[in-house]
Length: 447
Image 1 (cartoon, one colour):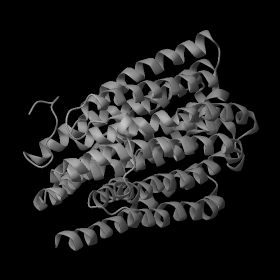
Image 2 (cartoon, rainbow, N blue to C red):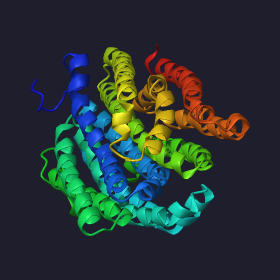
Image 3 (tube, rainbow, N blue to C red):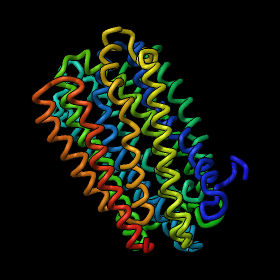
Image 4 (cartoon, rainbow, N blue to C red):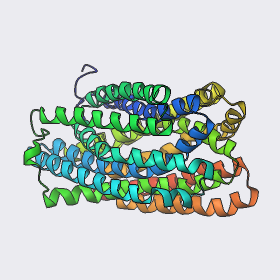
């Protein structure tokens, strides 16, 4: 099997197949992180710390909406992969055409919601007055790209379900070149500051959407999209939404919980807020590398569940868990060793770098703990169970973190007392999610 071929998820060496499937996903996810990193690097280096703080203050709200769309894409991926594994081409085609319209409609609704409420949401988070105007401007422009993001996530989900993770990587690479070029032009030449990096992000999102839509309309076989034939089949829509809404809701719950973390960050001075914004870029790198193995876990388990390949289902979970854990250990160690150099990409001020290191020292030692939680969630989704994991996340991450912020952090009011909530919530939620996955596997597979 060549690296650039489609991966057959139901046949062949499993570890090799998961790695070949995941490598382009890792690169794709990292490119998406680079979009935001490019925004922060350009605005922080050339527009000043205040502009960096304004964009950084938006990260949680950006993730709140984009995370929901990614969750809907997870539903598309799992349903498509299952029908492909079972060889049901008519069902695959109906799923593709239904999910295209669903993703477009949901992203348009999120656009309207976000545009209307971005100012009140930032106020609710306690965003510093000196950062508020720039943060509102960034969000209002960025949200105009949500329909494009919805379309790209749809296309990425369909192609990944068919074993093709290579082309989405190329499309994002093209969009990334545009994003970085426009960042430099709008900030350095046009002097648009925060607005400039937001415009660059939106333009790159629409380019990636057009490229992936063009690819799907030229596909052969059941995954081909004919826009004029797009229609919502109720049965397929129900299947996608039963998986996608809890998955999207789960991502939104994580973001909602992190909004309270941002509330805690905003209780410090502006220097700490700016340092946190720079250090948060490390999260994106590590999480998105790990996320590639979670996506592989869902896709492989769903496809083999459809093909009734039980032995590959069980092994897929174990392999993906080990790969995600060790990737987090390695990346966390590297970021910890080169933390100051990394933060220097986003901020020139030494005090901002010092503030960012306070966060990174804790987080880099904690990332690997999240692997059990997220891989168990991905495995449950692959078996068609999404609502239960969402409820566990709601209690273990959202409720737990909110309680922590208003008790432990409120008492100590230190940086360690804020960021240690991650490792504790990941541990508790991971144990519960793994127990839920074991129960699902026993119920569906008999062991």
